Image 1 (cartoon, helix red, strand yellow):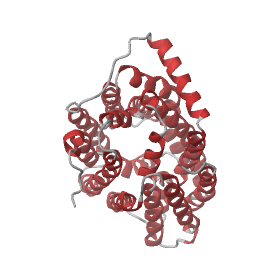
Image 2: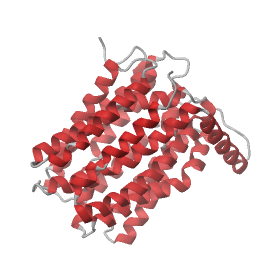
Image 3: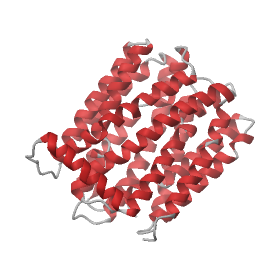
Image 4: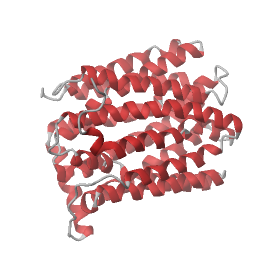
Length: 394
């Protein structure tokens, strides 16, 4: 039994190669919290800083999503990657808080150009192809990304131990440049619109928003997605980095932790591929969220770094298990002409939730510590599960 479906690589090889090569070089997330802490920032400041990206994205998400629908997914994705790379390059040269804020604003705006557009690009490439190619793309992307990040964590640990933490931003910049080069080779099925851009963006955004509100499945799905994103900061690197540091975990070892986390995330979609069936995506999402909530509930009992790490890995694995199901469920109920804009609407909800939760998580860590921040993940996730149970059976 082969890993790739017949004809899959012929269409999708640029996307898979992009994931492998660029992710190997993008190990900044493993070390960025430590880097900013070494600059003297508090966790509240870190929460505010990290919230800049979703806040900035919130302002530009729908217009840039509509641009992708009107002028092409490929153009939007590559332009976004270029400016994201520039944002990370700025971080390599500056240490002042104000300058770092500017860099994060650039990254936030640029990320809106690719959010939603990249998935829409792939979905339309696979139109009229065997249905399992779409499922394989989401599952295989997770597997390849996790495999690349395993290597990335090890490479990052070695590079940081040889040079210094500042080097992470230069490698992040290179990862986006490589993405641009690789994705230039991918085809795109796109028909250019000739409508006036100002009117078209407004019309496209309104049409998509009304469609999502009137479709009960999408309405409850987006509500649940908002809550999952709200819970996200309470289980993110902002929280588990200080938790592991409280056990005297060395800085360079976070690269190896990142590799361990990536290994677990690589396994998760394999379980999804084995057990996820057509039309049972909603149940699978509920299952993954419930197990992740259970992991967060017992994290308060961790008294060694081994126990804490084990619970963090379990939580992330269960979250990632449900990701292919979530993506498939979302795109199943969207027409092609609204797909990228709907993805941007979802990204807006995620941005709002992330901005709120990052600030709250930072405050909570400064006041009572990271353990209780992780614990709060559970009740929010339970509420997300409730919204998914409100969706009528498929």
